[in-house]
Image (tube, rainbow, N blue to C red; front, side, top):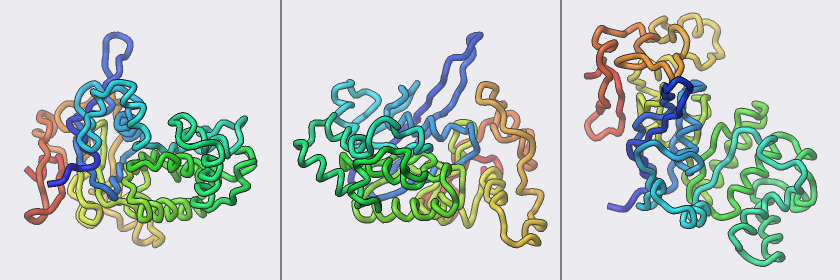
Length: 322
């Protein structure tokens, strides 16, 4: 059996707070991602999605667990080796305005990773910058301009070009279209999908927008207060959601038909507000907002259970399926 591209095992991250308390942002998350696949990570703001992405990239140090990239444990890797490994793992941030230094021309911004990793001479690097700009749908002469001269969608294309510069195998895309106009989002999404086909890229695609996640993902992980409460093949999770939280998120997607919105079942609606990760509920973390909650849910944290047809990749943490 071939080694997966990315293997995340029981990964956790907690932060120290005043008074000796701890904030548990990511709690024992595990998944496997193959070459050319996209894992969509979805959930409300504050559920730990972005923290998970930063742990995978090594931008944050994990509290426990491991991140294995092509069989090598990144969490144990010394800084000099990790620096070289970063060529294979890149990131696209949410805000293209903040991700680009306004004082530096676009060409230099894209060339910078090549300079840092000492790849090619000046003439070769400039030619590569021109190729990368054309790859993301921008003219080569864009290299001589500053970021403020471009629209939001164009700036995100520049960020994508920079992420591609080192020919990575894995890209963590953290809400890459949420800061863009709706009319531009589909263009950037289609670009990412096309690049994946052309280059065999793998994505960890983080978003709160289920419609976007459905479009790009092979596998979907639904996070709630640091835990993955449901994971499976995208088609199965969207057509047959098992966790009440997943059902509520899907029910919240706006319907173009007003009658369909009015007919939405109350059993699919979220109750209350998302608790803080520094004050986690006992038992199942979702029970204070779940109308299906039983006494067992208040006392006992659910285990991960395989659901669906035999051999189907679909897991859920919920006592309803125990």
